[in-house]
Length: 531
Image (tube, rainbow, N blue to C red; front, side, top):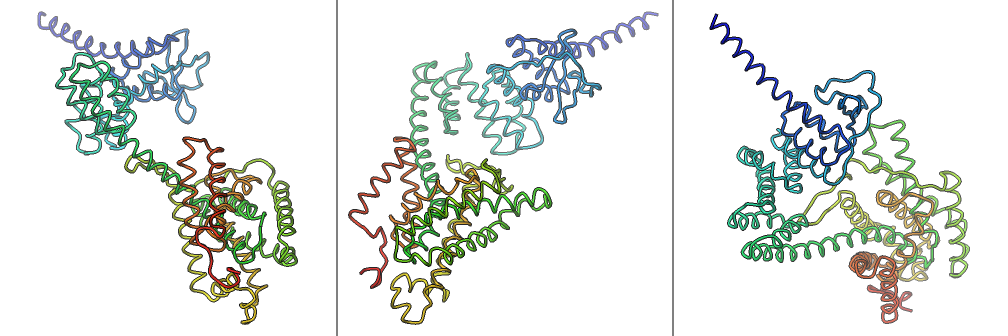
């Protein structure tokens, strides 16, 4: 009998022990079912520490505004990506959807608590990418409650990159929490300083304000080092942005350099050739979306030759019907091409409408990566590569083909080329078609970084003429150097003068330069050109 009583007592203790975590979990979830921000913040930490199997899903739902509660009984529910409600305590789907729910609200403190909790929950994830993101979240949240989990994660971590960020998160908490020894804080300063980003700078400034004189000295020394590195990174980032802008200007201007250089035509419709290339890309992508969705990543490679052919064909038609009758009359040519630009814009408005059209980025052009403190987007990187490829391809055509030889001959001395048997009207038509086709290719690239609208070309026509005149009329190398120079100069002036005033300053400097060198950076050689 005594043994039976002891057995019952032991069974009661076991049941009580099993019920205690469940009760703790219920209390943690209950703290979220309120409008009180302070209680929600505490509830986030309590749910993260409860060990509940649904803890990660509930906290993630709170961060995405997908968590709600029923005021009548404090029942908590979260909604998944498909819109199905689940019980927060069990994870079971709830059908039909509960009614009378109120969303669990967020403020900045709750968001920080969510970030810290999500970081703590995923520090032991089997996926290195999730562990890295979690370590970064803990670094930014600097929640002292995460220190025990951080120590375990550092001891178990095998990935060097993740381990470094975990150590930085641990050091950040030690720097900002009370009670840490000065020796630990000085060691933490060195670890945090290795990160060398604005987040590390903010933590070190906080440590310098609150720390002892020894910690303050170490933090200030680290701050100066980070500021120097950030200044260099900002300068390199501006250079990258300038090269990116320069590559866009190169694409937009390189076709104009051909028509302006060979024919002396001020083609005000050149920007509309760029627009036509962008709309060709839109049409190709629409066909891929509606009929061949699996081929969407191939939409740009397909659009490039099509844009060249469409824009080049329209350019050849314009030359044959209008421009050939206006050679030697620059003012009439300017007015005629301006009128053609208005006709093309209105035609596009009538066909596609006046609003912007969406052109998506293929998977290989999405995202970015960090390099030496710079953020480099794949889209801009591929545009630079594409611009260089077009430039080198055009150089090869001009230097290695009979057509290129004839076109260079017409550029340097039209009368002598005609006397040698070169059909200059045919070269004029092909040159105009080539320049227009390259403008169409530029439109494919610009569709990835700018709005595809009937006014797309107007944004680049003035800059294109500036590039051509600055580099030297008809000189491709001059166009190349000019485009990159103007792009980098624009990006370095923008932080100080603003985008509009920066362009005005560039224009003024260009006018002063042309006064000294009317033929640009690289003047063409030839009797006709020099006459």
